[in-house]
Image 1 (cartoon, rainbow, N blue to C red):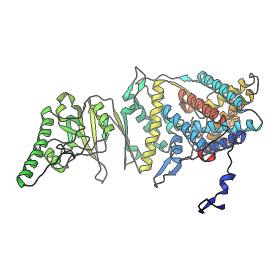
Image 2 (cartoon, helix red, strand yellow):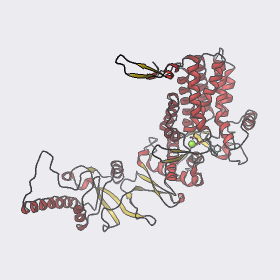
Image 3 (cartoon, helix red, strand yellow):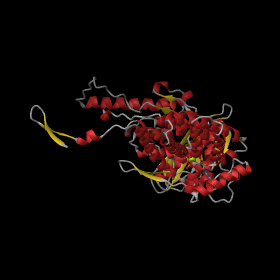
Image 4 (tube, rainbow, N blue to C red):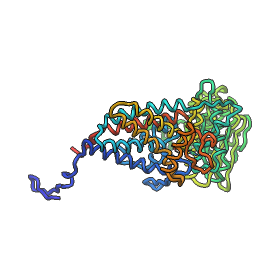
Length: 535
Ligand code: ADP
Ligand code: MG
């Protein structure tokens, strides 16, 4: 530090550190970037696989999250480094596209970078490495196509779908109930799936959770569950054959705008105003009754007077229902969302066979179940669990399972998990490397080595000797020419993943390799990190 004075004699301090801070460029920049990205990958490595560890993350305001999901961990980690952020982005893209495999993709990218670093040290130009990686990823993806299998499922035989969802859930905290949750996920997806178009709209599956009960009490409700109750305790708790008016207009008399003025200076005027307000309410309630509604679901609130009147006139109501839920209710019951009372007609009412309020435990918490809807294409998974963290993690795990089931409906190709697909690709890439002329050959070989990272991490996390296990499995794959051999994480006694029923979707695995390669290429091509303070 040095003290200096400006032209008016005011002192100011020069920070030496600023001068010493130099911008890294060239090979140093690449190495620094690789180190940063690998640091992020290292964190996730221990979370991979059925025996992977969970991470506990605290947010700045003290909320605690416990998760095993790569995308969630990285999202909450608040990575500062720019290159580290690319890895977060990588995990997020896998989550958006596929939903599962978010840890694996980061581990693969980390391994690719590790290999690239060694090549850089040996003087291979980053562009050559990038090109070699590109070639190798193409070889891997083609190889995956070759070893992939199709399985047929029908509405009567959903076992393959359930098995694949179970593989996804086996690495999560909820693996105690994986069979049950996998069945719920498959049923939910099939309920909303359009098998003809091979499309699934996951928006129609609502996942709701409530603290209490046990995980085993989690259920699939054919309809909508919302965390609301009737607006008045004396309203009926059970409505059969409900005709539902779905309103986005408030049960309120119109409020005077600020530019208008209402002067109330006598009792008569006040009475008149009160009478007028009552009449408004009366008309609104009458309007709903006239069209035949037996239940009103309202996006906005209404005051005590309206509430009382609704109860009195025998029109049950639910208030403060969120926009998304309102839309789901409208879809499920075949109703229309009505923005003005004048537009309410009997065709716009939604229909549900049963609307009931259900209480939980000893608390006053109640939830509203809307079941037997006219259009049954909307379901709710209602999760129970000991605490909030558990429920949140169950929601995330279920999301992975739902995505996997959807991916299988879109494309029913699978590859085997437990690192078997990676080992098989690694062998294929290794074999192809010999035929490639030029320096790229080294990069292709490095790619083959990097593919071993996933099985290696799986073995390590399961308490096995990583190198011994991997080499043994690799040798066995070559000997038996069987691409289904992987790491026996759960010590079942066989490492044939076909026998263990450990499946992953083909598109998920392909996407992992493609995305990881893309990001690594991107990082390799950065040779200068310029931030505003560095000029
Ligand atoms: P990701 O977020 O990448 O899905 P996971 O923690 O879910 O990470 O781990 C997935 C990996 O664990 C996959 O490579 C999968 O094949 C493997 N895996 C899952 N279940 C088993 C099992 N029972 N035996 C061996 N490997 C398994
Ligand atoms: Mg997973």
